[in-house]
Image (cartoon, rainbow, N blue to C red):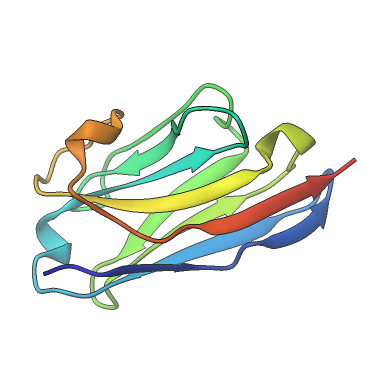
Length: 124
């Protein structure tokens, strides 16, 4: 069983920064790719960023490339998302997800465990 718990969401002004964290339980974290997704009201869940099990490879949605950075600490079973230059269109519930595979993926269906989500609101 894997449990993912996100933290770090909140309200920030446009241009500001937030850092999301996801704490994972379970012994398979270090061999699992991880991802961040988000869902805005009335919209489908969308891919944000993903990282391989080693942390050596990352991939981002075009909408966040250059502004967001995903990282992981396998010793602490955590994955983080540093979000800079936030814009109102980044407002959403952000979800951490685990993939039962070391290679990254950009589709939600490739992930088998999800956190409960953390709200990020960016005011203009």
